Amino acid sequence: MLKNYFKTSFRSLMKNPLSSFINLFGLSMAIGICLVVYAFMEYEYSIDNFHKNKYEVYLTTFFSDRDGSLQQYGLTPTPLGEMLREDFSHIKKVCRVQDGDVIIKYEDHVFHEQVRFADPEFLEMLTFPLKWGATQSLTDLNSIILSDEMSIKYFGNENPVGRNILVKFDGKQDKVFTVSGVALPFPKAHVIDFSFLVNFDNLQVANPDYDLHNWSTFVNATLIQVDHPSDLIPIESAMKKYKSLQNKVQKDWAISSFAFEPLATLYAESEDIRNGISYNYSASGRLALPIIAIFMLVLACFNYINIAIVSAAKRLKEIGVRKVIGASKSRVVSQFLVENIFITSFALLLGYALAAVVFTPWFSQISSRPLDLELLDRNLWLFMLAIVLVTGIASGIYPAFYISKFQVVRIFKGSVQF
Image (tube, rainbow, N blue to C red; front, side, top):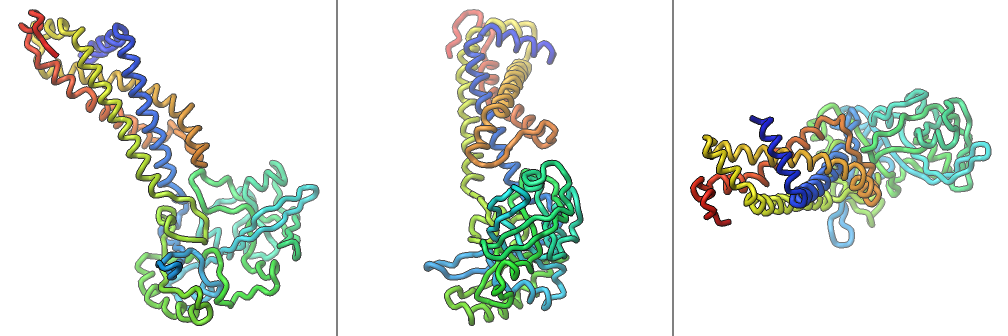
């Protein structure tokens, strides 16, 4: 029976090329847009979720009254990290992060770059596996770890571990570092990364006057790691001590309260967090794009409904013959629904081609997000199956019931009116 339905669907497509093209083109465009939105949402929700400790690592933030409103900041006072490490046994690891502009020199290669100063726990809390070298090398003040991109930029495809490079800080202080590691290429869905990674204490090499105990200065981020979220409760209740220390020194940046944002949801919450680790999150984009995709799909379904009802006028005798030989109303309905799902499957193939070749590269360019549609992604196949079934049934259910209710006598008399 299904085989017969598919044959009928294919013949119907061939007999009505114009209406078939309009239906297929409209549905494929809508499905292509839905696939791009799927790729976007998949990328957004997987950002920085490859870290194994994403539910145990938290970013320390504070709230301050600025410009007449209470605002959240990702910066933290410089001494806070070390004091948290000493005062709380609940905290397993602490990592301070600070970025700085430098000049990197290796042989004839000289470039302006950005180096990330971080405590040795950085590569333990954030799981960036290394291609070469060891994560423990970050404990060495004279070691530097490169991203895969920077390794290729300066050393090509060779293993640079053991090579020396010169780092100039602010054009004044300079130091020779030994390459001790190279990270594997970062996953596409990431925001936190690094180009050059050195021990946090090198901040005092870059600036000999830098005071690690000065509450009036800030670092870009202070990350903590605990065993369980419940361990944060006693920590949060004891943060008033550090609030008082900060507010005594820096009245212009009076802190109202501290808060801890988990790494697993940090990107989604980053729209309201100022400064600190840089994010580019837009909640409106997450909301607007699915609405646009649904709207386009609904329009395509209405377009199909209109054309399907008009096209049914050419198939009245076929419907009448089917009913005469015993086809029930449910059989006629199922026939039209199967035909519509068959057409929607064709539209899915065209829509995927449009999304992969045209829509996704274009949207990646304007959104600066490396989107793609991987056929090995099981969730993508489930999404496409859902698109075919929902779209096929939604666009075909009304024409199917509308056409199946026609009486045989009126069909052959030619008295059916649409």
